[in-house]
Length: 456
Image 1 (cartoon, rainbow, N blue to C red):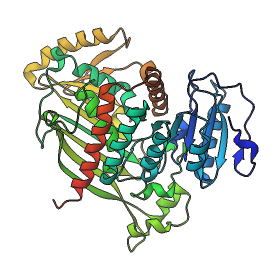
Image 2: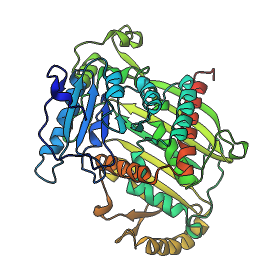
Image 3: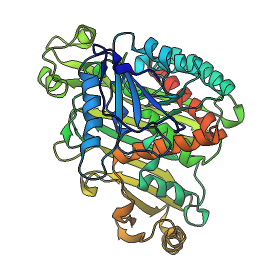
Image 4: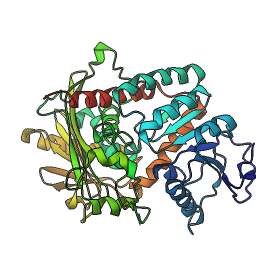
């Protein structure tokens, strides 16, 4: 392999490491503008060579990425062993495609450029592991569809990082919904009372890996980051497909699957100049943000979105909101799956100490005794995989007590996604439901974006 460190002006020296040529997977990290690119490296993987090739423009984003990986390498407990070979230059994409020292491109950063990175990588026969969202505009959806078709033809795997599937409360919500003696059947719902709803509230100013998160200025440009309706909403749509139709391929083009976005809207979060400086370390707005600035220098960010859609007659709603910060805690989440016998609800707010907590509530009072009996049986069936699960009365139903050993943090979920991706790589293909739902998910988000632009 070409040793990039031969040119000191465009590469960094790394410690000598054992040869990785016997490993099946070698990562190439492209333009790591988002800290998610670094979280993939929180742990080592048996299948992945320890040398990682990084191609990026010089600047603070690259330095933040390198510092995060170094933090993992130098921690006292279970340190990692990543050795980074870094190319710095504005021709980083062409340089990566020319040299190709690895076979998997990892990308997390400017979402406006991401689909072009993915398209070019696939054209050159490179697998892709990408942070969400893969596309942020409706006119890019066709490019994604064509790129995935090309990947299929070449036996390449394109996969997006869906960390929320690995939250244990969400996993258990899915498991309990598959027990008809407890849950009944998923109701079809209506536009006003959907069968399944998910709301996620995030904050621009937060702490990651023990340090205040510094966001790049472009994070607040919807043409680079994407509006909330196509960004965080990707996770929520993915969870709805994954939970309501487990292991079933949903094809947005198939009339029998009935995929339709029926309503959508978006609105702004406003940041003061001081807030912008605090979260970006930038003294002033860059020129590309000036169109979103009001007369009092407040910055408008179209970070919030809500839409309702149907799949096979089932109504679902997704809501994404961004505040500046939550002084009392972290991000919040709400999710409900409505069954004919019981409702499965996740709450993550101050009362839950901002930890996702699962509740089971009878769909109607006449079902209370039945649900209580079946809940005990359901938890017993799950005990072989989740020892120590229990239920205690709470509000209108019962809170599921989840032992701490099963509660992993958000950062650990990136490792779970990478492990799943590596397993698919070993098998040589994505399951049919993963492949179909990947495209359907982005059809829904980009269709919601387009619909939110139409007069209400």
